[in-house]
Length: 318
Image 1 (spheres, one colour):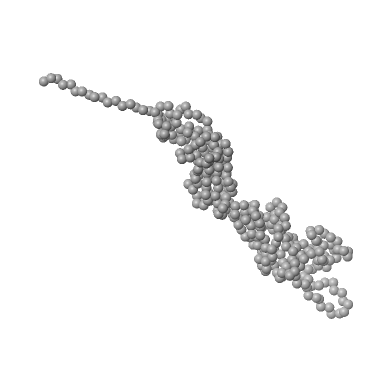
Image 2 (cartoon, rainbow, N blue to C red; image 1 turned 135 degrees about the horizontal axis):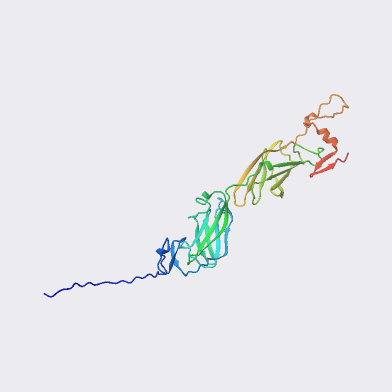
């Protein structure tokens, strides 16, 4: 029997350490990357060691429009627009926008022919949860080599309507030219009431001011000075009923928040003349008419001055 020798057949395999361009290798350190690659820690992926280290450049933006939003339809969404000096992949998490430090699922990124558009359709849900006030908007762009650039802007959430500042309310009564008193405490026919007040924020469009009781009287805009808005109304015939009048102010801010403020006991209308005094003897001189209800009425008459159109004028008979 002939001697037999075992034959061992050795197989060989080639090891390919080249990474195809379309494959991304995740990593946590350089040791986990193939030859010629290094780990980009902030992206947890391997990139070529000779990759350029110039970050993407913002050509325009980022810009937020509108910069102030609310929950009111038509004012409840915003968009962030910007243009980069090089293309990045919006589908590979290479472009990120944070609002208030959060990546919001309700917002969407799209690539436009002239740049990038990030749309947040409404300030409800996760956006409203950020709360009222200014919030940072951070845009982060990462190119194919892993270079990172960031730019910041801001958006403001406004969920509150404008309010009349209580201690800013001012009422001026301007007597008619034929009124013998230089100062009046109530309104009669010919008297003009000037009403001024401030809002706690900027308002947009027309402000409606009118009385609501006892009857409705419309006040017309007079002027705006700083935060103060002035309105006026002159009592004409037919005279409105006597009584203390309540004023209603309606205003809308720049993002559609509307509010109605009621001001109580703003002014008093008195169009009823005093009753004639009782005279017991013929030829008696009456120095005081108690039904007027003004203890200093006679003194005002003797002073010889009156207020008209916000100016003091001497009586023609003094």
